[in-house]
Length: 519
Image 1 (spheres, rainbow, N blue to C red):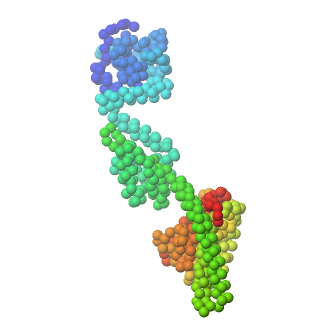
Image 2 (image 1 turned 60 degrees about the vertical axis):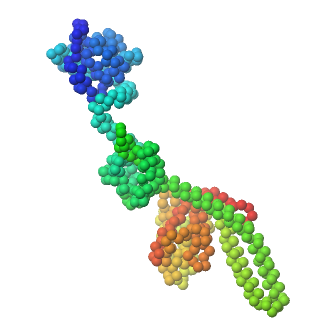
């Protein structure tokens, strides 16, 4: 080929830079007759690690593994360019550090009044290396302010596509983003599954759609924390499309642009199960503390009470024998004293049951048979009140691994309360059905209901004048021991529903720890 040291680019440098600024591949231009490089774009610099000042006016053979391969390729390309105006092939190139790589190469013919040129585009075959070069080039572009301004819109679209790809591929968390006003602009599939909204239904809507009123009011503090610290972790109730609520663990990130905040990214995980476990653990610890207090109380009161009872009996015996004038009134006082001692002894015995729960005697329990047996007991007790009792059990209700005696005791407490809440008669419905890995039992009455804000599961809480207030506490204790839970809903004047959940595979070790010795 003819050597031409006056080879010049077909266009001015500024025109070439504008023309190839948006090309993501390495591009250089050779004069066809001399093979000299007259243009070298930034992508070529990143790929080969040669600056333009070092490559301009150099023969393209410098880029190949060996010069003979370059000449063969150049002659073939020149023939194709002359014939078709386009050539595609492969080449083995050498970087400045001596490392080799394979590339797909295309060249297009560019005739001008200054001469004929070949625009060469090099695409590295190795995907990993190609990505590394793209990242390196991106870093260079971020440092170059003028080029950053030219490609700002293109980079914004690439960022949106990347965020969308990330959101679609996170499956363990519901993920969504909002703008600074709280309007949602990204929503992944996991969010649709967790909250029930399709992306088309939720995008553009305000965050308040899924945040109950009280949760929305509480959002200000964690979002301010995310703005100041970059991230914030908190817990709150979130509303599903069907109206139900879930207790969620939320991690919020502030999304920043170059100089101002662009919005928020939220990672949401259903924490209801973990919250329930934490609540059960706290309740077990609470029961253990009460057990220890009950053990101490029984020990400190039981022995003196026995002494007082013995002394009262001796006094009664003495007064009856001596036949004193004032003996009748004194015997009446002693009778009252013995009555109070009996009441305290009964209360103390109830406390002992709380303070020293026994291990569960686990065995297979036929729940329908147990419920029908309880119905017979309740119907007998409620004969005068005209109580109607019905039982509805799922046909495929599984057998429970439970302590039948304790389970019967707990259910009987709830049923007795239902009967006592209907002094003028009414209806009790018992429904048993499976829910996940547990069996649920609903006991529904049409009684007087429970006053609002009344804590029925607390010790000594009772709406009955003569009630001690231990029954429902013991119900909660027994149900918790069966790896379950008990809740209720009530409308004063209309009735109450107790909802019991019993684990199908309760462990004998699930009860609270035994109290101190001495009972």
